[in-house]
Image 1 (tube, each protein chain N blue to C red):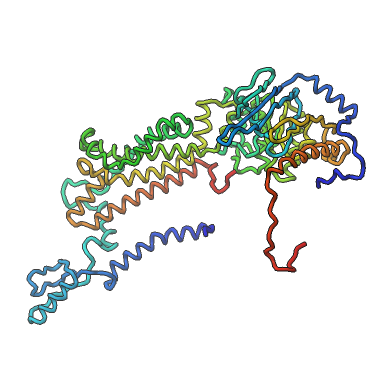
Image 2 (cartoon, chains in turn green, cyan; image 1 turned 30 degrees about the vertical axis):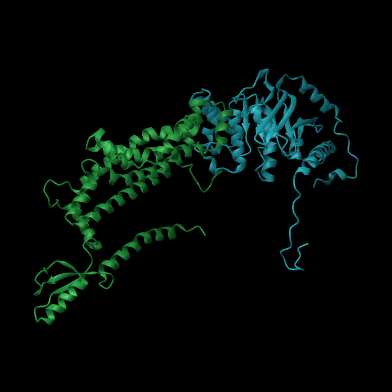
Length: 313
Length: 307
């Protein structure tokens, strides 16, 4: 089933995995006979509540059209349209572009990239705090059975508590600004992190530890010179996955206390029905996430030249 | 290939030694005792009860002796060498290295494992430097010593390579250099060439003898390959299974220096015949516990025969 693909084939398929959803989106947006459940009024005619630019359901439009026609009044005109919450690709692309080039309509409102930068800082802070505790604790759990038995049962319990459940508590303790948001990301990441890192540490080939023991390696040096370098490539992969999880906690975290960052941007734009901006912001999160991961993956290949999962031995 | 027992010519006894060989063993036994194993026992306790893996193992090796341990599978030879290395604890008796009891692993006993255990994140040179550095040698000193060891095993061109770039034989040569770099009193080798192809294995055996000749080290070597055992050993410790016990300590009558041509010499064949006799008779007992392999049902058309 899982046959090896050539790198060219992989690249082409990878591009298509993005092109296919885009094509579907284009079809739904640009082909009037696909979906388009509404009519965008271009001329109101004599229908008193129609206005140009208004969207009405197709059945409503048709009954009003027939009614006007049979009454001998001016008939309304319109084009098939999708609901306002599904903008076309070009609208989203334009919104994406103008978000960076044009000042926002509301004065003093933060621009898209400023909102995003704030979010990135919250994520980074949360992930750094979580890693500062989670990685060392995870390695200790994996390497020392007593530490593992002492901490893992509780962590196992705690990780089932949904991080957003701590929102109100976090606000009470840490105020309404960035404090509780960082805390939610830490709570959402840390407990998984300890367990994943501990598991990675336990997977280290025990024969390597025995070889180091017969060479006279002891305690702390065993940890610093064998366990840690031995798990480093896997630990790095774990951290990449965990960073992705931290991103998924972002929106919930930013809703806590005063809404901030990219979430504030998204909710604000949605309130004014600027849906192309909403999509642009959501896609930007995806682009940042995937971009970071690809950069980190490339960096990993350079950092760990010995790590060749295909040629183990 | 093991049917030489039926060779037409009567073989001499494996106990017969030429004066030169006897003289050599005399000198060997006059050298100080490095390793002394006294009444060593190991029992594993599990829910099903206790299993005796080793019972009352006693032997001693002298400085610069090449001791090979052979025995049928399940005789506990790996457990024995792991206890010698300090990786497992015995449940009875003791191991004395130069008179001092062994407790836990240490740099005075180097070990080469069957699986490749080079540190994959270190280059060949750094692998060899590892033992020196963790024992407090400075980087420059460790580096110059490591380079000497790499020269000795003929891998000086691969100092900056990573283990995954080496062949199996090369990896084991580096593992030997790494184990020897801390200058252990004994080198323990647990079927180190077991995973190599026949040709590489043959070259590695000759290379190991060459290293052993030039360095003050005692080697304890485990194998299940009887040719390898006779080719390498001064003495062979033959074990039997269930429980693991010493059956005999054989002095190999094949003169040194050894050479692959000796594989068909009388003294070699006599020793091999004796080993086979001991190991296969022990094997017979073991096989009673194992099920016979099933007859395979015919899955080809009648008449479509290969033999």
